[in-house]
Image (tube, rainbow, N blue to C red; front, side, top):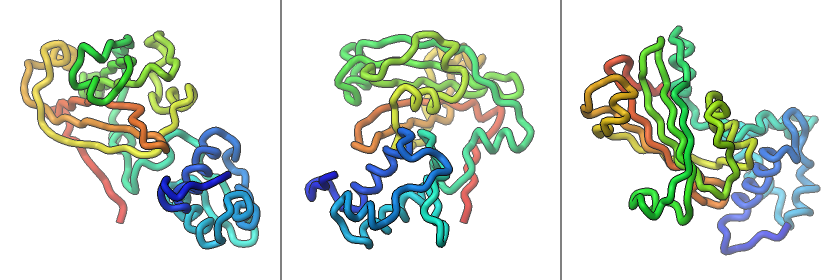
Length: 236
C-alpha cells in the first residue's frame, strides 16, 4: 500500500488501514496481525512507524501485544473503545436500573428542507428516532441522522438493539466521536414522547466520523434528568 505525505503522518495512515482491516474482518478477533517485518515491507516504512501505529491501536482497544507471540486482535466492533471511561448505559445497568429501547421510527429526509441537516450532509439522509426508558419511565429521546449512501432497512424492529452494531453490519465504520453538551427545550412532539411539558433539558449532540473524517452520523439526545442525572465515570 502506498502512503501519501499529504494525508498526514505515516503512522496514522498505517493505523487507520490496520484498523479498517480489523473492523472488516480481514484480521479476525483473536487472530494475530502480520509481524512487524511484513508490515514494514508492505507499507514501505520503518520499524518505528509500525510500532507507533500498533501502539495507537492498542490504546484504542483493538489489539494487545504479547511477548514472543505477536500482536493479537482484541476487538473488531464498530465501536471498540469510546473512551477510557465507563459508558453511561453500562453505568445505569451496573447500578441495577433497567434500560430499554422502544418507540422506534425510521424515515428518509430531504435535507434541502432542513437548514441544520444540509449544513452537515450533502445528500438526503435517514432519520431514526428512539425512546429509552429507565425502569419503564421515558428517559431519553434520541434522533439519529445517517447519510443515505448507506443502505439501511426501513423496518423499525431492526433498530431496537445496538444501533452502532447494526450500522457496522451495513458497512458504516466509526473512527471517532465528538460529543457536545448543553441545555435546550425539545419540541412538543419529543416532550409528549418523554411524557413531560416542554422545558429545558440536558442535551447531547454527537458527531461521528469514519477514518476519512467524513461525518457518518449526527445525533441529538434529550435526557430527562429529573429521573436520573447524566453521570460520567473516568478511569485514571
